[in-house]
Length: 155
View 1 (cartoon, rainbow, N blue to C red):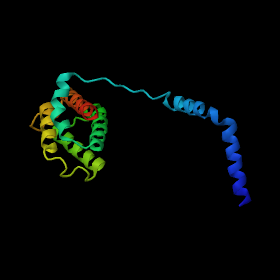
View 2 (cartoon, rainbow, N blue to C red; view 1 turned 120 degrees about the vertical axis):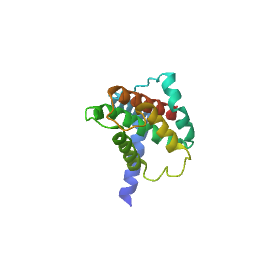
View 3 (cartoon, one colour; view 1 turned 180 degrees about the vertical axis):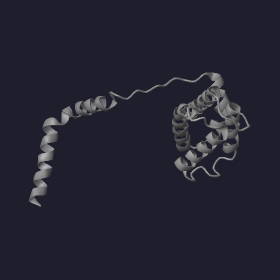
View 4 (cartoon, helix red, strand yellow; view 1 turned 180 degrees about the horizontal axis):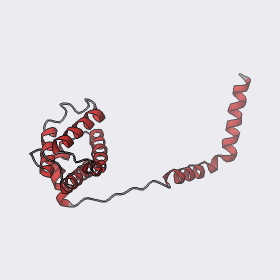
């Protein structure tokens, strides 16, 4: 018990002597950790935002909006690598669905009535309805739409 009191007393003395410098240490720590972080906050064109606005408006729970924004941004960032693999539109849709199921598990199942339907329409506007090997333009169009969706969900 005596050691316990000694530790508390020592801690109080340290706070008394150095407590006024505590905010400085926190600020230095924040600067060090944030030094290499780059935040790119470029708003997509209005035409791109308009394509995904309906999908974004269907999601009403803030946590779901944030998670969907992160998911779509990450998926959009990976789309360029799929072009080199000659991916078909059906394979890309299957990949998107499998990724979404893995990321969200069942947290969105049955929660938003028309979300799947409107997301499918958004995909079809970019890559078409028929299965085919995607062109660079189609992948870029879908990438822009997903970034727009991410923007609409997060703002």
